[in-house]
Structures are given as C-alpha cells and as structure tokens.
Amino acid sequence: MMTVARNEVVAQGVEAHYHCMSRCVRSAFLCGIDSCTGRSYEHRKAWVQARLKDIAASFGIEVITYAVMSNHLHVVVRTRPDLLESWSANETARRWLALFPMGRDADGRSKAPSRSAIEALASQSDRLAEVRSRLGSVSWFMRCLNEFIARMANREDGCKGRFWDGRFKCQILLDDSALLACMGYVDLNPVRAGVAETPEGSRYTGIFDRIQDRASGKDKTWLCPIGDDDHGDRRGVLSLSQDEYLSFVDWTGREIRVGKRGAIPEYLSNILDRLPINQAHWLQTVQGYGGLFHRVVGRMDAMMDMARFLGKRWLGGVRAGQTAFSTS
Image: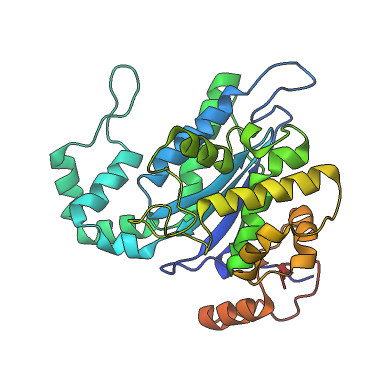
C-alpha cells in the first residue's frame, strides 16, 4: 500500500485548506468524563479553544472550524501566504514574540513583547525570514497548539512524557466539495458520537461558536468567514453564506441522527447546485469521512492538478480506500 508523507501534501507558500487531527496517547482523557475514574476533564476543552484563538491571532493561518472531543481534536485551517507577505518586519516580530515570549510576570503569565525586543528581532533579516516562514506553517501551528495543551495536561496530571499519539495527522482538501464534506464531518462530530443532540448543543466546536456569535449579533467571529458577504473585509472559504452553511449542516445532522438517507430538501438544492457535489452520495460522504484518514481529499481532477503543481507523484498507484479520497 502506498503511503504519503506529510511534506508531500503540505504546500508551503500556497493558499490551501487542511484538516488536522491529534489523538491522546494515554488512557486518561483529553477532555470529557473518564468512565473508569469518573473524573471530569471538561475544562480542558476551554484550554483548546482559547489556545486556538491565541495562535490564530498570530499566525498567517485561519481556523475554519474545529471540534474538541474526549480523546482527540480536529482543526480545519486555511493558510494565507498573502497575509504573511503583507506584514511589516515589526509586525512579524511582534506576532512571533507574542507566541514565544521572552519573559513572564510573577504569576507566570507571558509578558507583552517590548518595543526594543520587537525591533531587535525585526532587524535580523535571516532570522525574520525563518520566523515569517514558521508563521505560515501548518506544522508550527499545530506544534504551538499541541505542545501547549500537553504541558498543561501533564502539569495537571502530575506526570511527564508523551501526551499525544505521535504527530498530528494532516489532509489537504483540494476543492470546495472536499472542504464542505470535511467541515460538515468535523462540526457534526459530537452529534455523530452521540454526545450532543444538535449543532447548537455541540459546545467547543466551530459551528457552536458561529451559532453563538450569530445569536449575540456579533459583527465578526474569530473563525474564518464562510462566505464573502459574511464579513466584507475578510475573504470567505465557500460560495455559501454563513446562514446557508448552518442550515446545510443542521439538515445533514438531522438525517445522520435518524439514520436515514433522506432526500435533499428542495430549499437546499440551490446550495448544492453551487458546489460540485454528488448530491445522492452526500450523506454517505459525511458519514464515511472519518473511516479512513486519507492524506489527499478531493475530486480526481483536483488531485491531478495539485500533484502536477507540487511536482509530486503521490497519485501514482492510488486506489480506493488507500490515501486518496474522491468526493466525485
């Protein structure tokens, strides 16, 4: 069986969408309630959410959605090399030093970077180029998330050693249909797992945050916008509005929960028509998305285009059920 290394699918300096997943290595839970001990780890979900917000504010990477489960987490991101290039030297240095502070206060909280520290880093051209590259790296993004959570969990548990089961897994999502299927799968993880009845009851997921922001009348969310019309100053990821996406996921979740294939409701047909999705297979696609963790997800033509662009040969020998997953 052919395997695909992470560096074969992650394209540096190119805008792309990725699905990342990390699983806890120990029997102790990342979050939730341990059925063996009865101990609750629910508070750790807030750690993950808060850390995602912090690093998303510093990296040239946007969080599209996420889901924090009992022993694993999902994050869907979009890389934005155009943002990286727009930052001044001082802005790049400030963002890096916010992630990796040079000092802490008496309570152990990181101090805001000083002007002199920012200017010192900004003046080092070679070091700054390395920093800028890292601020656009999916690997560094996940490193900043996972290492932070691992340290806090180990400190709380009074132990040392590995917290995560190896490095995170990563998929590249090559087209709108792959992205939408992945977003639906991640946002509906608690519903599919039976820990929530509805998307609005799925706390610590991207869709829950979007629903709460909408209900509170917030103009902006910390997450990447769904459609261009949602937030005029920020580019969306799909040719749908946020309300259309929420309706779409709600319907998908209802059909999955009742275990029926169902027919696509007429009022959702126009949404599906705008995206190259096989409507008859939509529910099977979302339900089966997590069965095998494929490194490359998208229609075959998109896979071939990306392989040519990257100069890779990872499409050679791909068969159904291996490392490539087609949404055609």
